[in-house]
Length: 273
Image 1 (cartoon, rainbow, N blue to C red):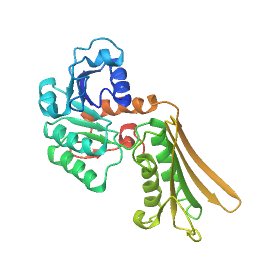
Image 2: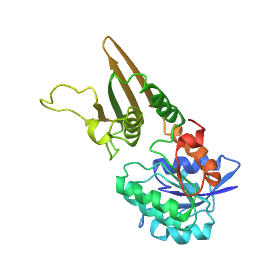
Image 3: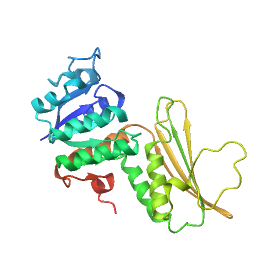
């Protein structure tokens, strides 16, 4: 039985993850963490998410270390915000707890800190900008297509709900980095994020990245390879957050046996090249 701690446990993603874990025969929720001073503190997370009492109280994040130690958590799942997640990862890895992180918006410096903590504490880790199984097949497809369509213009368009705080999405940025790396282009030089005004002619090397925010869009990502007289579009649409949660469950199962001291991706979890 895999013992799982969930941060942001009372939020939309966290609640969905807690519910899904309770449906699994090989894992259980042993800790539920939320921001300090929440009115939910002390309430049973199972009751909050609608699955009945689990005997697991919601605790504030400033008690994370003691909660992880007392609960015997083997894996911590984090879907919060980047600044909070960095501190969570630091504490969890120091406690020897494996991590599954789907939080997006990390700066390069924050990601370096995450990697350093995983390495120094020799834990298993899965960190991915998008844990949907289909999205990771999408990334894998882009990796294979980009070298074949190297002379096509490439544009990335992403759309999310109006509450999303970071832009472009982590998924769009991963798609951008995958394509740039496969084409041996420097991401710092070829990325064009939105266009306005007299921007001049498009260069063959640039990769456009565009963000749309509106309503309750869960997550749409389209990559357009545009040539003379033809266009190929690779698209993934998430209709519900359940697609991300399905990937989280796979990542939880993978993490205890993941290679220690390195950050694994969903490619590793799914066995993709």
